[in-house]
Image (cartoon, rainbow, N blue to C red; front, side, top):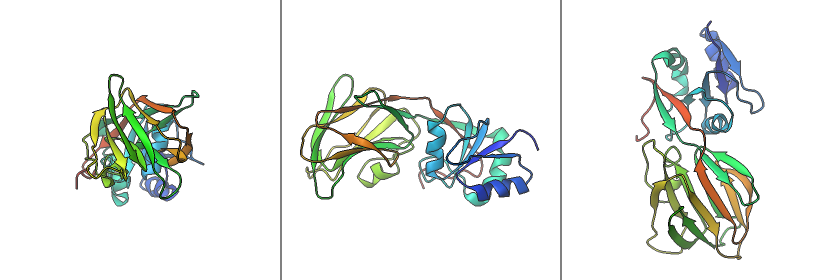
Length: 237
């Protein structure tokens, strides 16, 4: 049966692969198997693999447009083709807070007001320049993988895999807001008004609140390698 393939996010698919003759190691209770190849089913599973230690080759299955994902029905054939897969490399965001807390995001990082109909003010900067300051419900910083998601719904472009990020205001006060595409390393976002509770979301998980004057700094973490096979779908369709 060969070297085991880890499966995260779908026990039913693990059974399908095993019935097809694939040696399988399941991820349990959110854990990521210590295998060289991992089938990650769904966006949450891909993000879990990105946060884990190790450098497996990841086959995304039913994981949205952000990565070249394989339909669930084609997963067994795709696993059989992994030996000949092309590899795409996706950056991971290392998100550092002022208290020393560090988290990792594969898709995006968002600062957003916790209460509906409340607005705050945000600054986005790089290591060399202040990029923009604006009043809005929030701001999203998305990797290329995350760019087809929420960042695109609020007006950002879709990026090919790269070490760049999309920065997009959420419901800005301005009628013609800017959006930016910038290198990931050295970005920061801060809260400029003490008017509303602002939450930090890391891949849609609420991490903590961000106080007035507090800054969230972003750098590059260890990248994720994803497999591209004949069954992989386009990111742009």
